[in-house]
Length: 105
Image (tube, rainbow, N blue to C red):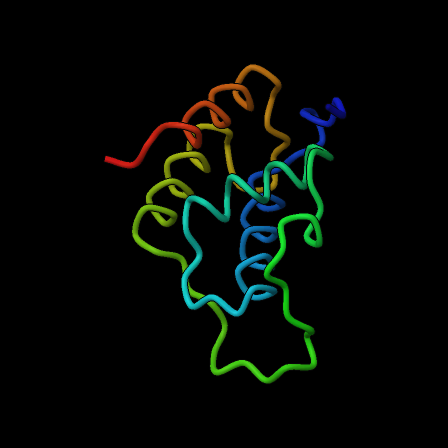
């Protein structure tokens, strides 16, 4: 795994998750997209390796919207790290990763 923890920001994670959902023509951004985005940001996966992608030339009805779980996650983690543009410290990144790996309620 690439050691990029000090360089990952919440804004990067959210933007990548949004891009993944759009790439896959999905209507919602979910916690699964956040898990996949983190794997991409850490160098463990690529958009192509995750499959399901559609060319950006294919018309979309509308951009994907975050679901309630993603909105809650984003607010909570933005508060924890001091804003979306602050690098996530390695120890908090480990907590964030663990939270994303938990099964949904």
